[in-house]
Image (spheres, rainbow, N blue to C red):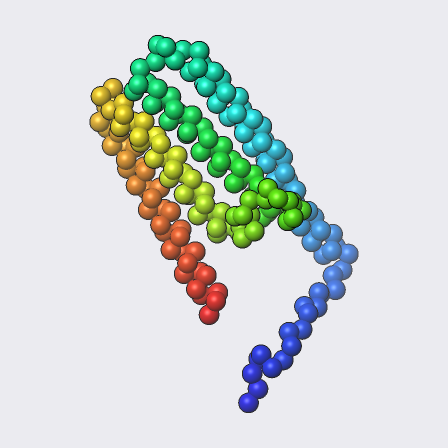
Length: 185
């Protein structure tokens, strides 16, 4: 009785394409580069977030004598929010480019993020959903600190949206796990 492991894996033989099919294949494969300007746009957005962060920080430093503790906490949470959104942008820019456009060629770079070595569309979705949950948590905390100045419906809506983010992330993680188990078997 012969087992499939007894036979060496044969390299895939590419189908011989006629010139029209070859041109279409090259065009389709090259279309991934249409995403490059989108990632450049996200880099511009990242720069704007850095500018906003520095502007808010400078404003805080200049006005620290007039800021009350609860106001300071809200400003710091706003700064944390900007950092978390910036982290989300980096994940999308680097991970998305590497996954969908082209390899970055930074395999031996000492600052290469560890998560980049095992990024794929599924893990990126989970990482992004976790980042969104973190951002949503910061917004909820800001609302809870400032709850006396907010309508309860607004706070309740934020809690509902946060719970939807949590449920979505759990569903994505579960789906990724089931898909991984199915591909392993």
